[in-house]
Figure 1 (tube, rainbow, N blue to C red):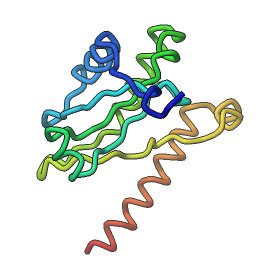
Figure 2: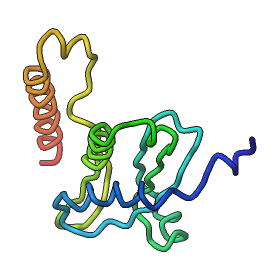
Figure 3: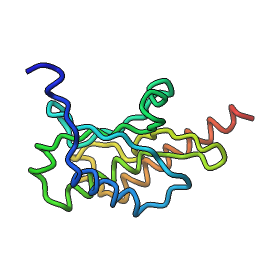
Figure 4: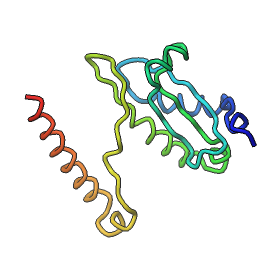
Length: 142
């Protein structure tokens, strides 16, 4: 199988599903997406910021959304909604500049830790850690 055949145009139903979830969120500006299917992708969905030079070549598209449709069709709607919404949550737009960036999830841990302490306590611990990092960055900016 050549590299070309692992990429394909994404089915419109998948794009509509993603956009339905995206449009249910409140973003301060419109985001231009480029969708692509990738049969070799190991996860359902990946969201990437498109570099400015490639954005220019792609009619000012800002975010590349790649989906493995084989995985998509193997999942139920609730799982798909959770995974799509999780990827959409990574999109961050600065209101004053309109600059789009991707942020990492605030809750990254192991299932055994969640099982031991519960989601609420692990989430709180991660938020405290992130706040500490933000405060350090703010101090450096002053």
